[in-house]
Image (cartoon, rainbow, N blue to C red):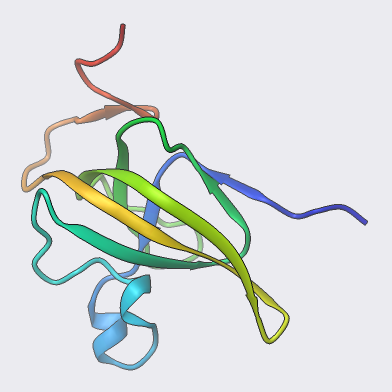
Length: 117
């Protein structure tokens, strides 16, 4: 038996419609009107590790590892693992750096375009 941990190069949250339908908690969804400079909370099932030393993409997921193009560039400020009724979760906070509204390429793999040293 091992310790099951997932390493995520991005933060993938659901569309806010899932919250409005009562299918997900609000922290599991991308805010309806996401704004640069603001801090938001997130919640993911399972034990997940995120990169905390720079920008990562915020993606929308519909489940089944189906992911959108980046919706925003964010920085994870904190991530905490906890158990609730024997189910592992990761919760935390992220700060939005920039919101994307076009189809430009803003990330290459996990790095923001134009910031590679």
